[in-house]
Length: 603
Figure 1 (cartoon, rainbow, N blue to C red):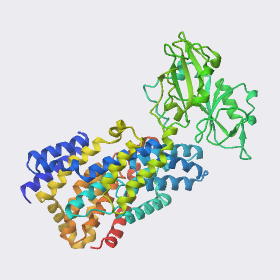
Figure 2 (cartoon, rainbow, N blue to C red):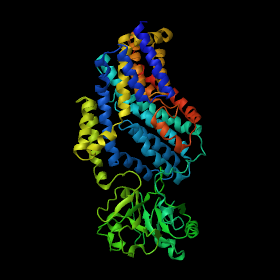
Figure 3 (cartoon, rainbow, N blue to C red):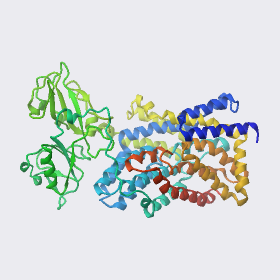
Figure 4 (tube, one colour):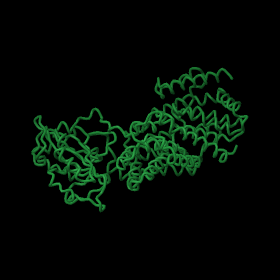
């Protein structure tokens, strides 16, 4: 082994230690690798920055923008919400849809985006069905990872492997070239989850209470409504399939129904004999003991307590905001009812603050004065796009804007843009880098994403990580280090045939991807896999597929990939849960690779 090869392997070892230890951020480690390779003369300055102009980085950046557009218009969320209409309180259906659908989606959209949308959906459904969410969340995260093997754009490391393969052989992967492997692996994983996997997870733990965002003021306490404002959840419909407001006999309890929040319609203003549906959230004003007794007297109702201003995983779809009457406002001297909050915004003023004192009665008829503050309640979607223009100045509004009505209307366009990106690339008419960039530009030109959102939607750290590590793959090749590692694999396993060598590439990729970003592992392992395949006269494409699958198998640690980490807190998982559940998935992934790769890409 030459001195250059030893030096490259030393740099790789130090980078591995830094990745695993977390002493330095991964993207900074990647930049240090790049600088070290240039200073030691292992790569030229021109070669050092080829990663930032590679097809992989360009494609990933474009897909990130497209993913942001899909999120902004609610395309993925729409798919997730439709699940609530087909599960019908059946556990097997709950498990299948909330693991299978994220797996399929992640073949076309960002893994984390697919998983993140399903976390609150699963928590809500598990609460309704009274089943432990710990049995669903981690399987969902793992199938989202596995689903990335369905298409070329399923994950960033797929594109990295494709780019390095094209550099080495002159031809990258087809869009659906390894779809068969991904589909079989996803089906096998689902079978494992149903037969055994879910039983290896904790079954009694519930998610901790939703986290409050520290900067948010306690508006309920400020307006002294903590003993006057309560939410009641409709857990099921009446015995005959219907429940109407007239059946609740509100007059017998002396409580006031302020509003009804409904997921599909956002807000049903309680006028007349409204029919209640499962999942509705009723907001009442009255004494706590009276509202509790009212809920207890009706089997379908559950007392949910005080509405929260900001929560991480809220069950309610309603939120509170505070607005102030600014100087020279047209609202000065007018009663609150003339603001048209209910008619224009589907919101309701439930208290006001004047002269240092909160007031909770007669809200609709008070004449507004300069400096008055109003406590406003409404559905989360409407609240986060609430803009009363000149009449009121929003003093506090929780969270970031959700999907607005206008954005929802753009959802079909965003979905068509995604198809326009995928189809030409899948048919080989245009490279995926070109269609991804064109799709990102279309998202902006059509108005789905404002120009300023482009840079927010692109994860610069991931791009720097890939671009910084990319020259390491060049150095592994040019120095002979990849040949040396490949020869070592052949020396140890080659005597048993090509299948053990393929297994060695897969297992090594799996081990490295547990603590290291899978794109970085792809950069390390792809040259090794190609050289190992060449040494035994095997098709390097099959060995690169093994790297793709191995890099997606980050099941054994919560911090191996953002998707498993995302469910750790809401699922109440310990590190041992990941190891116990994920080990069999790694074995299944290895078995699928060894069974299909020799068949699809013969040795």
